[in-house]
Image (tube, rainbow, N blue to C red):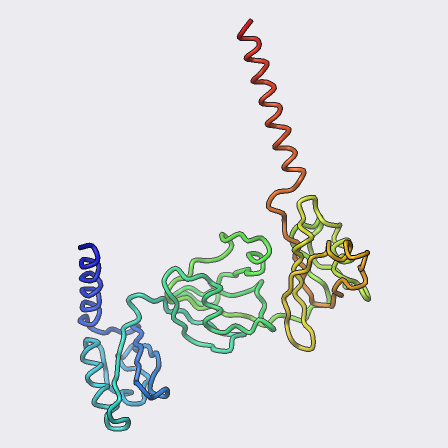
Amino acid sequence: MKAVLAALLVLSFIVSVSARGIKPGDVLEISVAGSEALSKKVEVNENGTIDYPLLQDRPLTGLSVREVMDMLTLAVAKVEPNNMVVVNLLSEYKLKVSVLGQVKKPGMVLVNKGASLQEVLLASDVNAEFADFSNIKLIRKDKGFDDALTVDLEKFLSTGDPSVLPVVESGDTYIVLKAKQSKTVKILGAVRNPGFYAAAPNANLFDMIQVAGGQMDNADLTKVRHITTIDGKRTDTVTDLREFWEDLGATDRIPKVREGDMIIVYKKTITWTIFMDYIRDAVSLFTVYLLIQSYSNK
C-alpha cells in the first residue's frame, strides 16, 4: 500500500511539473535520441525564448512541457526523422549555478539541491592545476561583484570544518581565480607556526615542518599531505613520514619540496597524551568515589 501511495505521489509530481507553464529562468533538458548535437540543457531567456537551433525565436512562456515537447518533435522530424524527443523541466529539482574562471566547462551547471561547493566545481571540471582555492569569489543572485563573498576552500581542506563553506543556492555565480605563482611554501595544520616559508635548497617535507616550528603533539605524521607541481602537472599525495625512519632511516627518500608547494599536517583523532589524560581523570574520579563510599560506611 505504501509503495502504491509513493508511486502516486511521484506521478502527481511529474504531472504537475509537466502541466505548469514555463517561465523565464527555467532550465529545460532536451534529449533527442541519436543526436548529440540537438541534446542539450538550455535556459529560458527573459523574453521567453531559448538558445536552441530549432526554436530560437519562438517564445515558450506559458506553454507546458508537453506542448514544448510536441513542438520540438515536429521541428526535429524535419531534420532528424524518426527520432524521439524528450523534454524535462530541471528547474523544479535542480540548482542552477554559474561557474567562471579556471574551469574547463565555464557557464551554467545543474546540481542537486543540497550539493556542496566541491560538487559544483567537479561538475564544471575545475582546472585544479591553476585554480586559487583560497580565493573563490561568490556572487549571490541579484548581487554585483562589489558584493562578492570570498570562499576559502583550502581552509576547509586543511581543517575539515564545513562551516567555512557556503550553502550552494540557485542563482549563485562562482569565479575561480588563477593562482599566483608563489615563491614560498605554505604549511598548514598541526604545526606550531603555520604560514608561508621560503623553500630551502633540497629541503624535504620533514625539513619544512621543522622550519614551521615542528609538529604539534597531536600531529599525525603518517598522513602528511603534499600538493606540488611537477612538469606543469599538479599532484596531490599523502605521505607517511614515519615509514622513512622505520626503514633504516631512509630520510634521503623523503619527497623534496618546491616553491609554491603546500604542506598540510593533519591532526590525530586522539593522541596518546589525551588518552592518558582520560585515564588519569577516570582514575581520579574513581578514587574520589571510593573515598566517599568509605566515609559513608563509617
